[in-house]
Image 1 (cartoon, helix red, strand yellow):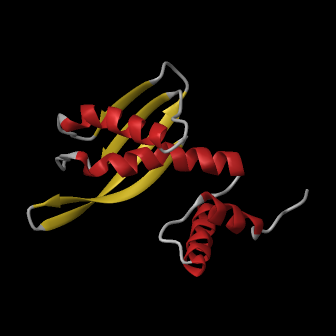
Image 2: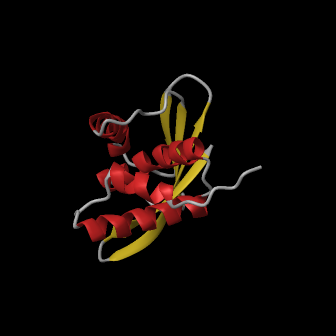
Length: 140
């Protein structure tokens, strides 16, 4: 399964769009990086897994491959930890809830609106749960 998250690389005073593609597949649990990452990405594996665990979520017990495109752009530092962590979590949520990417985006937008109306600074699980209640059901 493939999930794509967009972020930016900062090079001096310029920025460049980076697409983080996270693929989870069967196999021994591992974490691999492609696309010209620097040495700090080896530490990223531990940071991402610790953050997911401390957030009360389960990390995928699968082979995870992270591709950082474009490949010719050098990626440095921990700035990519969040997109790397979000990739498998977004894909897992979409699969469990049977949502398309468009529907998932709409649910998050509605959850943000519900959170704003409640005066909460962040989107919480109850905001997402309420947003999911408004999703149209298709019976077959």
